[in-house]
Image (cartoon, rainbow, N blue to C red; front, side, top):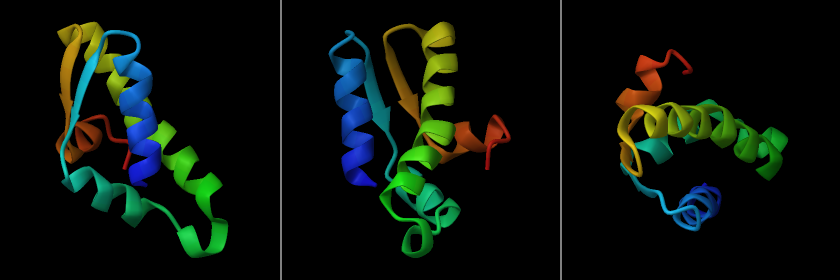
Length: 79
């Protein structure tokens, strides 16, 4: 999970966007994944579904410095 989140951080950093991800986000992602059954691909899919959609919305709303928490994910009713 950390590797996938770090990839997202790096991706947006290269685009000039600073992301701040709360620690509780890992738990929400982990709860959503069945890692043992589906493996890393499922984790990547869940992260893309949960995090990247919120990131895009937040960029539109807030600009190039945004913070993402599990509450943001819940507000979008993704979980």
